Amino acid sequence: MKIHEYQSKEIFSRYSIPITRELLCYSVADVKEATHKLGLPVVVKAQVLTGGRGKAGGVKLAKTAEAAIESATQILGMDIKGYKVEKILVAEGVKFNSEFYVGLTIDRNTKSIIFMASKEGGVEIEEVAKENPDAILKFPIDPDLGMTAFMARKIAFALFDDFKLVKQAIVLFQKLYTIFLETDASLVEINPLVLTDEGNLLALDGKMTFDDNALFRHLDIEAMNEPTVDEQKEIDAKDKGLTYIRLEGSIGCMVNGAGLAMATMDLIKYFGGNPANFLDIGGSSSPQKVIDAMSLLLADKNVKVVMINIFGGITRCDDVARGLVAALDQMKVGIPIVVRLAGTNSKEGLEIIKHANLPVVETMSQAAQMAISLCKDCMKTA
Ligand code: GDP
Ligand code: MN
Image 1: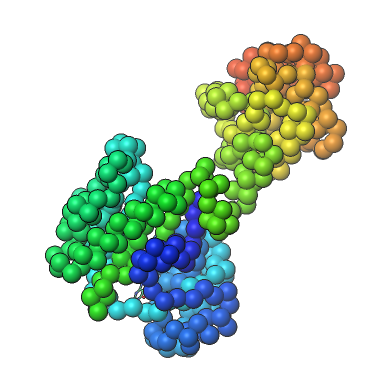
Image 2: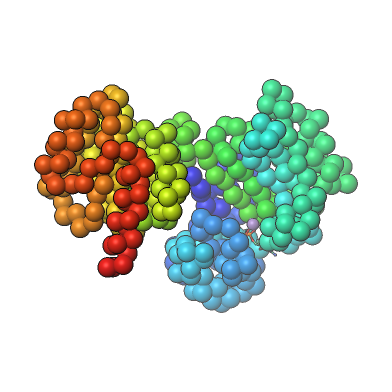
């Protein structure tokens, strides 16, 4: 889960990491008032859940109240990488000498949290990462020791010569690590961390993402979630006991068990098709679950065929079949469905499916191939 810059900085300031004075705005009138309160100059910043706002024209320095209003008018409603700007952050315009990059993330290679730091912070950091990766220093943090004063000092000396700054940085880096741990973050980033004309370190921007599976421990953070349409579907599915991930293809999959769902997707790919989703309806599947799963698939306009692949262990195939028939009775399904049932009560299940005039296949491979050919047919007629 991602949060906005203003929310990340709110968390930073809880841990007394210095941030700019700033106010969140929803309208041009808000921006006018915020500018008045903060004093000139101000920086007007789009709040969207994507990076590179500066380059997209979503961050503007304003030296007069009129300029702030003009920038706000331009930025509100703007589209940045598919995200519409509905909130603006007005921050005091800070004078600074240099921009640094610091970030924490989980590194699977070193099996640890890794601290990244660069003297070349600012909007070009992606370029730096590509063209000059050595300019981004990486420090794996020993999980048993945590961010020791020694390690924080080592990182600080890599960025700063001035001992006064090193001292500030040590405290800041240790706090950043504490935030990472205590919030179950998967990314914490300050870009740029600036050295102000007064000689202080200040977080000018902030970015945080969190481990979704740990959000139950952080209800305050979960409350900040602003899911996209697709993400909301995934959340709704989870509430109904389904695990759903939307993909780009056109073959809707309904499968019981994550492993079988992966295998099904692999098989569709193997035979030249493209799965529209990952959907695991779980172990014991009641008819209601099948109905919920079917509605989820049909709501996706990309889905041209549905492939149902059930292996009955705890799940009883006749239950799934009944659920499916009930679902088809309830909703208008205008697309072909292919069903493969195997395992517990498959005989009973297949009887029910046959009665409902649905094509029945014996093996997974047959099901995938049939789904692909039906899919091609309906692509032609569409
Ligand atoms: P991003 O492009 O989405 O990462 O947005 P940032 O918040 O990092 O802003 C982009 C750039 O705008 C920064 O790298 C700074 O150079 C500049 N900027 C942001 N805030 C200020 C400010 O208060 N004063 C000045 N002079 N420049 C700023
Ligand atoms: Mn930035």
